[in-house]
Image (cartoon, rainbow, N blue to C red):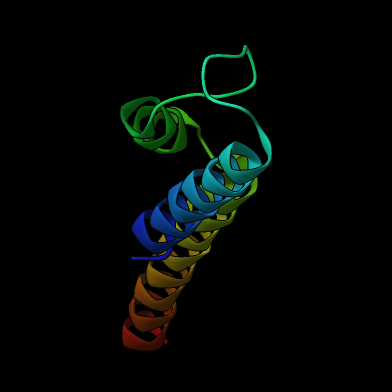
Amino acid sequence: MLIIGGYLAHAAHDVAEGALENTFSVPGTDLHTGTGYLLLEGVLTLPLADLLAGLGLLTIARIMRIGARMHDELSATV
């Protein structure tokens, strides 16, 4: 959920930033882009920090699960 939420927040930020830039530019110039381009640009960018944080959390969860299983095995043998 963290990865998807971070990605969607990043995409919404990019779209809003591009729309704000379009309000300052004149239609027909190089700085002015269409709404479809803004949406595509916002969706295709990848928030690397959010992706790494999500993958780190998944890794920690796996390590904790393996550690709990090892603890249970040790308790059973002692």
